[in-house]
Image (cartoon, rainbow, N blue to C red; front, top):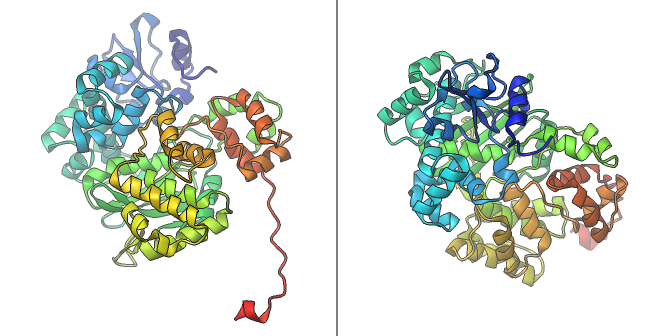
Length: 504
């Protein structure tokens, strides 16, 4: 299967087969009905001459189509193209999902991407069929639909949580996009059977299967910082900062293998960016079938794919935090990094007060970059040069001289990171993998990854492994995840007799 899907005949075959793998990658607009659908819509397949394919629902909106009431294309997982692609359009889509237009307007989005507002509008209209305002409007309507059918929030709260400036604007947009009023959309809801605690929301997160949920929960559990995060075999929760204040979320898997998101935010406008963040953390917009087919075509990798067909590459909750965690974790074990980071969070993190009985009531926020820059040297242990590098990076992030966002250009981000003292290729590429969701990163200098490669019959030496892995492009991040999983488990060190001085 080619990726992304751009050929008309290939797209038409996908909608004729009602192939769910393509949901979210494009929409099908039907001229004879004036509606657009997801590829798996169960309705009768339209004639080819009546079909126009659009890369985004916003483009279909702009062309005068409304969403199908039967298949609800806005309920599909997001497109994996925005991670696979690193161009301006993809970066813009990631930033729009992160709420940049709501916070900074089109000029703010354009400035982040290095263009004027007019040129960016022209570029996105040509590439995606809609300008930044239309793309943001489509994202708001998607969020509003999700909240209307997935929560008991009032329509007014839904409007402001989705980023609309007024209830009337929300109502008008929903009627225009879906051909239904907010009340009619809510009447179509399917209850989850789980009652949300007061002040929280509970949503089901769509994704493309298969999903290695147990693997990603285990990854989180091994790295969870007490007070900041908590993980079990079926859940992960954490506190984090959003633009409007502290927030908390929990993702858990139910018996039916659905993923539920519970969340609390300080300001309703943070809810949509929080959902986007959670989707990045769990890599829920990935296309595992495309990844599996590509990697399994190599005999050496087929057993790894068969063992974990739904492997994911975890994203980051906060780009700045991710850099600090990567710098502290470089060249030491996961356990040692967790110990150092836990001490840093406990000493410099912001303690949250609240009822211990309420979801997310008490906890800890990861330290601000300003706090790490000013007091990190008092807490961190290790070589002085390493501590200076960490506090220096935190200072650069705090004063804005180093920018790190989900919408960065990957090459420019790597160059900027490598220019910082104490940041080498492993750290820069690891951050690119986790922050940008770049699916094509290999970390040949990683000891565990090389051990997994050797155990899987691949070259264990960095240069040879790099050369071999070129055949796995554009999915080398997922190859890395498989090799980490394949790394032999180190036996625990045998206890040695302690001296009196060591036990005192």
